[in-house]
Length: 270
Image 1 (tube, helix red, strand yellow):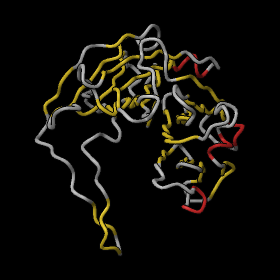
Image 2 (image 1 turned 30 degrees about the vertical axis):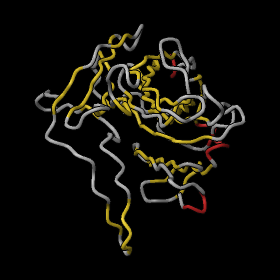
Image 3 (image 1 turned 45 degrees about the horizontal axis):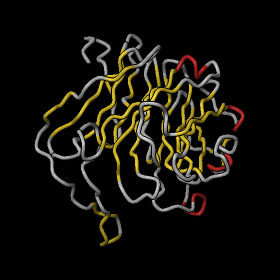
């Protein structure tokens, strides 16, 4: 989508590819393309797309995943109502997107039992055999302080049959303990997987990742304690060059953008 279509800076661009189509989403717009680059039957304002579940508030921060195991598309975002705000989900009926009617829509509020209550910001998304994993940064209702991170586990089989079953977890509370910061739900297309994951950088130190396992995600999920992974030395990123401009883009910080678990189909190694 172009700036003239989206209207937002930053656009928070997202996309994924299915068997015959590419689905692209940004703040303010969602569009489907053929793999030849031809716009298909879905070309919608994002508020219109999520209108049935957005409670009259604007939609922001979309994430998209195509699930090869069930051949469905999943789109998550937040609405911008006062805290606790909503997490909204769109689930396709199959691998081919014809128009808005190809999706079924769901929503839940950020303050699920077991999770921090506040304004949920920047949802991440991972999908595996059993569940959708949505990580979230949480802020106080006044939007003046970061209070920690939540993780939400959505039962995939129930969602695909039309019922939302969401379980919330506090992944860490700011200033009290540690855990994955800007937690990424981990994408995994292994059909034999039995557990899920959230992963993020350590909020208080460079060169360390925090991982939490989700146990029994397809039934009654529970969350593990932290697993720490030491990685090669990391620091804050440099600003990024732009083509045809002397101005540089802010590299922000060391947080992760996405996470995937890969399996070697020949050797079986993960």
